[in-house]
Length: 141
Image (cartoon, one colour):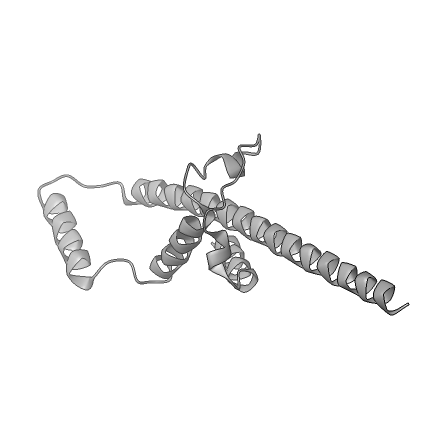
């Protein structure tokens, strides 16, 4: 879980202008971490990853829903259907681990792509600046 939070933190620190991710799609590659982005742009995934982070941090379900789920489980157990709690915990933990691993990969891919976009913008600005310096030098000589 720490890897997931670390990846999301890096993504939030790197992505200063999320609007730059609008309309940016990942090309289909052999890498499995990029193949699962589907046909949504990176901005949508950025917003999704941030909202999932908030949910995982403890803002999952309202207390009323949690109380209802607990009451339902107690009723099932009282009816003689004793659940294998260790097995149930293992099942849910394994599922949570898979989901967090998947989301961690998405956050890392999104961060990498954003850094590429910023690098291209910076390279373009450097080239423009260098050409303006060259033009000024030619004019003044």
